[in-house]
Length: 376
Image 1: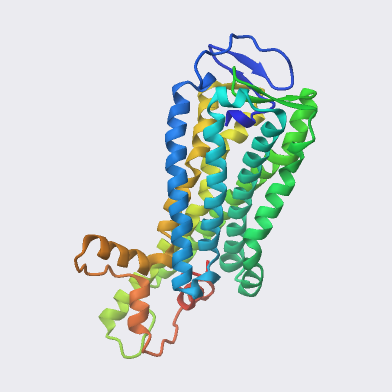
Image 2 (image 1 turned 30 degrees about the vertical axis):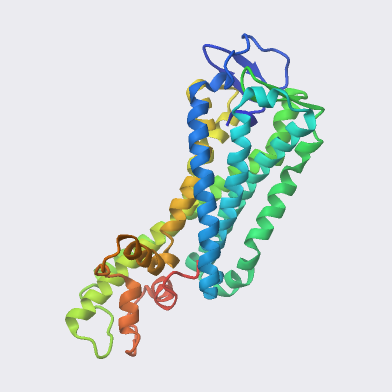
């Protein structure tokens, strides 16, 4: 995103500007949107969509948790709501920042506030997703459910406190903060090397570390699930025994349960992918001394999708399977035969004693069996 490419060169046919110096070798664009031009209008539209969807996410989570207090133990739902708050802060700030005329009239203190709010919401968003990754590590990889349940109530508070605390030096650290409409960048009056070092220490290093962590966790969880899936597939000729259930139904029960396990893992992995997709180009821009225009545009546009992606991850959350089906039936106002899924079969089989015949894969599979959505 252009507004926080502090140390980068933006190289286009229209301008070249380096943050931390006084060299701007192009005339100031006449249009209100500066270097981005029409791409800023695209950003406006996506930001508006993200704000609306984030508000829907917040209201929906509040309603769902009010109707079913047991779901408050699902960290993914609360993190979805907290992420939506960050997305609203970010998108609203960016809609103002896309307007050069507005930004050019602001006093320095207001520029610093904008800078802090955007950096703080970004780091907080990454930390919230990292919290989700930690929860996956504890629940899936290490199977340490005790500590997962002990620390999960503090994910949101800790993320917001750390996110805005880490980035608060933007309010006082640099000598002067100005807005340069030619390249749509915050101009940090500071030595270039010092400016880059400080912005990485209080901002980009945290985002980069979060992206790397989330990538590794997503990879590890899916590798673990792939191993479990292959073992269960190889053992499919001896499905788990459910006393009182016919053999044909036992095979269907085991097969459907395996599919649901894979579905749950995939849907929960979507949360970890959002910061990777939306922030990777911004981090790459800040690695480079000279950023090409196409990368400059992607670094501005991709983060605007955070609210939209968070909403999509929320609506496919496994904890909302039953509510989602009821909503679909309500919208279309007709009885629809429910698709076979693990939760439905689990309810059907609940009246039976269910001795497990799982061999070698007891760890992850039994956890899913006891807690269908892993309390995530």
